Length: 309
Image (cartoon, rainbow, N blue to C red; front, side, top):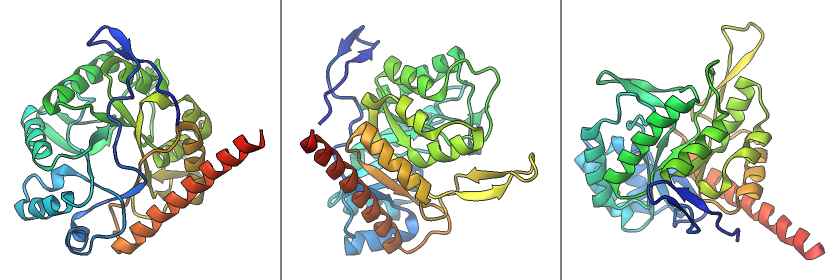
């Protein structure tokens, strides 16, 4: 096991040697549980160690919430929020945050995560996760919002690296550095979406492996894997762009990057995401089983290397 690194907690004004806040107690590869699979998951108890849900799908759906409670009695759950908008200069929606707090208190997920993005302005929700400039002002806004979310939920929040298609010339920090600063300022955990790293690197022209190497490993609480779609880039004829659709199997190059991430971060709970063109639940279970096999190969290789030394 990796030793815990010192974590700066500005609220207490000192360094802590405790494990990263936001650590997920479940292990292995889970799957994103979407509403079309809910009854099957509740009645057939599929062979996965944990599920992750978007709580927004359940807040106004009492029947689905009741089924989810029955699942939560048998399997650990994680929440992955899509509506908190921690990058918004308007601040988080406190009514939505309160609904989320009550639901989390009811269902008791082991982890609550969300995106480094913004999606609200002037009280209007935008159906997208929009990019942010990585500078000191954005860091101040995101830090204040994460503090508010964590105070309301009474637990650490876990922040995911985004899928990127454009960048800002005004950015003064690299994305991995920005996330490290945010984790240091708030004590939040980090969710490394390996598929997002791969497609962002392809879209933005940087090295995905170097990004993983720069990512603050001490704060990692979870990994995500999802499929993407290749589309022509309308702005640059002859070039393609990778879109984070969660509508396909995980690409082979992403599996390779996932093995590198495991070697860097150590054993981490890993989530298989599939949101569009949803296949049978058995397909997601097979993807989760493949993630387990990749992890076994990585750590078996590390043990063999250690024994040979």
